[in-house]
Image (cartoon, rainbow, N blue to C red; front, side):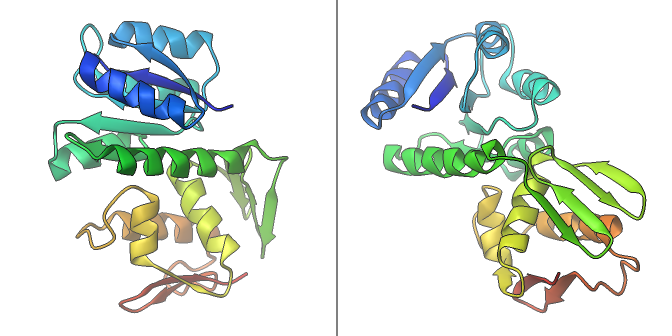
Length: 225
C-alpha cells in the first residue's frame, strides 16, 4: 500500500482528498501546518507528498526546498490557488514533479497521483545502469558519468532520460515531455529545450553536433544509443 503525505490547511479540501485517496486504497497521513508536515516527512517514509503552497508557520515553497535537500526522489504534487506561469515555473525549479491549480477536478487529481506513483516505482527497482558510448546513467542513484566527469541528476532529468532511453530510436514528442513534467502539451515554454541543452553538455562529445540526442524539427527528440 502506497503512503501519501498530505500537507493542506483547508479542512474541507483535505477531507475530500483523504476520502478519495483512501477509496483508491492509499494510506494518507495529514498535516494541517507546514512545520508539522516537514516533521512528518523527516520521521516517516512516504511514496508521495501532496503539498499546498499557502500554509501556516512554514510555506509550501520552504517545505519543497527542505524535502529536496533530504531526498530528490520522493514525488511531489503541488496544489495551489496560484495559476500563474511564474508560480508554476518557480515550483518546478524548486523540485516539484507536478502542479495542480485550485479548484481542481478530483478525478484529474487521482489520475495525477497514480501517474506520479507509477513513475516513482521506477526508482525503487534494483539498480538500473544504462550505458551508451562513453556514457553511463545510473537511474537508481540519480548519477551519470561521461568522459571521466560525474553528474548528479535531478528527478526531472531522470524522468526525461528514462522516457528517451526507453524509446530508443523512436521520436518522443515535445508534448509528451511537457506532460511528463506536469505542463500542458501545448505549453509555450523552453523548459524542454533547456534540459536537452544540458543533456548534450553531459553526454555529447560535440554538443553542437549531437549523436545521441537528436532534434526532430517541429516534433520532438529521438535518442540513439
